[in-house]
Image 1 (tube, rainbow, N blue to C red):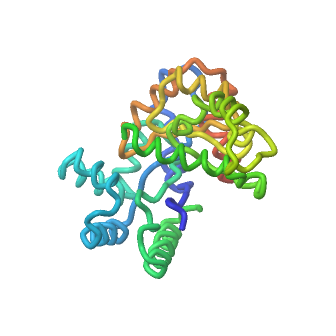
Image 2 (image 1 turned 60 degrees about the horizontal axis):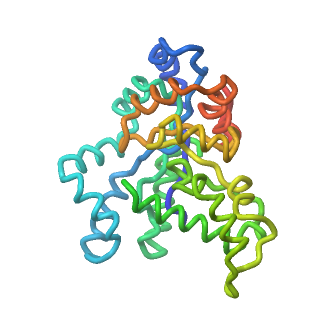
Image 3 (image 1 turned 135 degrees about the vertical axis):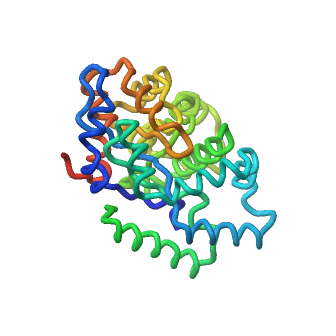
Length: 280
């Protein structure tokens, strides 16, 4: 099972595009649309199933438990309410932030924690429920785990055997774009009899098989470095609502010193191409 399902909201985008344009007023030459590419959602059924599974497996998913505990029950309840909202609250946040389209990602821990039958049933429920809506399609621990997993895929030679897949990493690549030169150097220097010999350097696979989103990382120096490493075609804007302030994320993004071509690629062109979202 995939950890998250990726879905887009063209209907919501069309409904609030005029207001979103107004929200971007004051920014020089704002893009004609902004697609936020890593935004959280859940169903009441997935939240209930996750809660029941955690109660039955008290030592499992320690990272998820620690995250929930660190914010307290009031913040958790607010997030749960926002995650399941696919109407006025979500539309209002998008309008205030100037976001015209969200790609919805099923909230962690997704469905992979369940047995095959329950996980498959929940995944089907998520996809069916989204079809009913007319939809297409913390500090360090999560980033370290996800970045390490992505690097393992590269070092194991997965993309030599399967060169086509395109993966999307949040938080500007979970640190990989910043460390990739060191990874290349150590790959060339350090020998290991257990390591698969790759056809190319690790950085080549990062640039060919991965895209990065800016969720939680809409900080201009980091975004600029990611563009310089990956190319503007492989970086996408995201806000990570409801876990991040979507208005602040959008305003910080629009205030960055990017060329018009770079800004439009991050704002919507790359998402249209990668996720096959119809242009406005």
